[in-house]
Amino acid sequence: MHKEAVKFLKTPLTINWSLSYTCNFSCGHCYSRGSNDKEITTKEVKSVIDKISAAKVPFINFGGGEPLLINDLMEITSYAVQKGLRVSMNSNGYLLDEKMAHEIKRAGFTSVGISIDSSRAAVHDKFRNMEGSFKRAVTALENLHKAGVKSTMSSVISKINYKDFQALAKLAKKRHVSQLFLHNFKCTGKGFLNRDEFDLSPGEWRDFYKEALVYKDSNSDIGISFDDPVMALIDGFDRDALVKGSTCGKVSLHVRPNGGITPCGFIDIIIGNILSDDLKDVWNNSEVLNKMRNKTPQGKCKSCSSYEECVGGCTARALSLTGDINNPDPHCWI
Image (tube, rainbow, N blue to C red):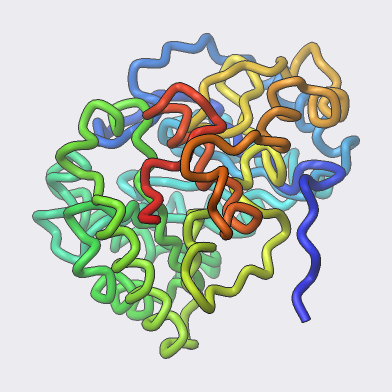
């Protein structure tokens, strides 16, 4: 029997924190390129960690930007671990040599995710606009394994890889990866500008998910995860989720480099500041979050029998492409 999903958790499960938007890559789908936040100090970061710990949030995930460009990242992580938090990060892997892998181990990271978007080096390098990035990313996974650090692999599904995702899974298995995350294309930031080049049609998304679910069920030796609420439209899909619809603002929050709080990294609406505002107050009383948790179905969603399961699909994508969080997810194939 499945657990009954709730509208939102009592406290965020994860704070996805972009300590910096500085990056050594210039990916064509990046959500944060062009943002110029003034970064808060290491002392302020530690005070925020105190707040997060006091609010009983169990997980912090560092993104960005490229976290490994942050000089005090290991000091910050060690402090968070001492406060009882479980810390992970997402990295492009370019700077993760053997020395860095051991520093990551000593700092106490629970896991590190490496972004690899194609099993073919030339395709990955072109997508990430960085020659040699595939080789460095694969080497990063090996370095993490040797250092005894749990690794995951993140792949943004797009036109470059949706017919070749099984090769990504095979690569993940070969490189000792515990979990493969197949992320849906979000159409925000540079992803919005380049959506015609990279995004799939609704029918292509449907066919990809159906094939990927079959593959997942027949390959129990690696965990495969998805983050797209429109998958609830597929018959037989396991709907045993913490919440229904988008998880942003219901399971997690995003923090920008200047401390600004947003529902997720792909929704650029400031709902508070982690330095000056009470985290629990923002979580429980934000008008924006309340609207996201209680969406009003529009268009075809009004008469859709699956609306209670997908709740309109990805809120970030609907907002980016239609200007209204209540509109149907443009990826919906119904």
